[in-house]
Length: 140
Image (cartoon, rainbow, N blue to C red; front, side, top):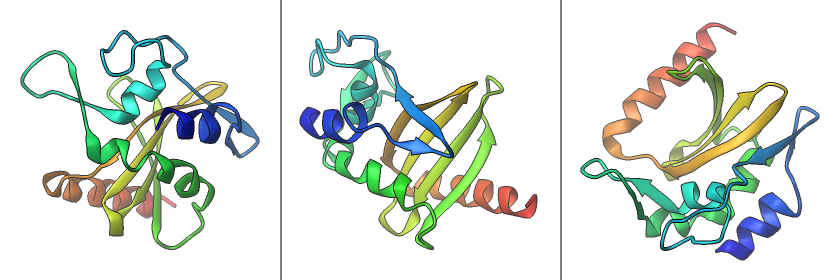
């Protein structure tokens, strides 16, 4: 998995609208990811709703190889692209492969773009993303 992250994100950076996408380069102390980039940790772990730590998420980890193709194929009708301000006021880009229940989130931290995370969209969250997608498209 880490090899895919290194190949697809680190060694072959993705360029979006002329801007090279970055990621959190801090070193993780998480038991599963110790010594690896924190950006990798956020892709293969999930924040626990019950405790203040991240748990390994096999489903996320198994889809790490989807990140690059989803971003690179944003013009494909299967990828629903939208933007939205997060709670801290940063604009975030969402690349939602709705058919496969998977989303990639990139944050605009001027002048950079940073890969924040990717994950399988739970059924309970699907309506939220659908609403955000529709709201974004109404403004275009």
